[in-house]
Image (tube, rainbow, N blue to C red; front, side, top):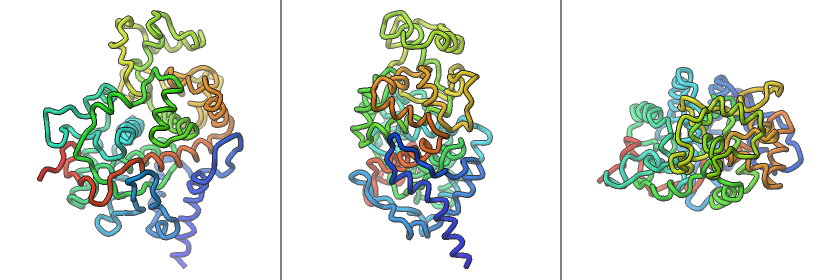
Length: 396
């Protein structure tokens, strides 16, 4: 009887995510309400037992090279996901900005050569003189490496040499989203760590804050994401803060004109300039870091969030809701690349659709696309390695 009850709990929790995997975003609204998003939800997610793997076939390939499983460590380190969850929860209540930081770190790792923890390396294939992804300009403002190291240390104490850094990053990103009020989604495991790092690719291929919509869609399309999935993923900007370094050129020297972006509404321009005053040389485009990524710089001393971007007359619910899309509809995008989603009809319609309901549609789509992102071009089986220290490859 007890096993039947547990199975019903599993089914009830997973139905929203399953529906989101099936649903196609358009003008129709998804009616299913996602599960509660809070620290309590993170604890409740432990209800997902091994029965889930028997009920639903998770290990279907998303991209070539992906062969992941649900609860991959059930025999070798059954407590692995619980350790990641509890360690991150402790960190979160002391450092609330860890959630957007780890979400951003996850994205930057997966976007370059797949979710293989290559971003965490301090040396390239054992060569300390070779440049690594951490050193690429788009990654120089990333935070959270030390938090991943802390979680890895706890996992290693329980199960030495078993759980990959790549799996820890993916699990920590999922749990960060949930702690920040976002939806739960299943994370498959069994990733292996890369022994190489990809400096040139990270420098050239991470999306930039000054990208137009064509380049943004192109970069995501190269990785198998359509327009709907891209618009949904960018909704992750609704948590954390966009640092002023990502905004200044748009405010004071847009496209080397020494003028602000003319598309910014005057009242919003004044608000942005109050938050990000011109304290540096705006005439040097290179100094304005235009190759930095479209991501939240949560440790910047100054900046803005998308909650601030909304007018005080616009109500907004939980932190992880539709205020990002509502801001874009009002021309109040913080990044040029974000506001560019309104410049093309197909992406503008998606923004409007996400902004028009109670947030359930966005949460569904975000859960689905985060599951897809976490499976992007992973190493499995005999590929790669399992690092003992996330910043150093295992050498023979």
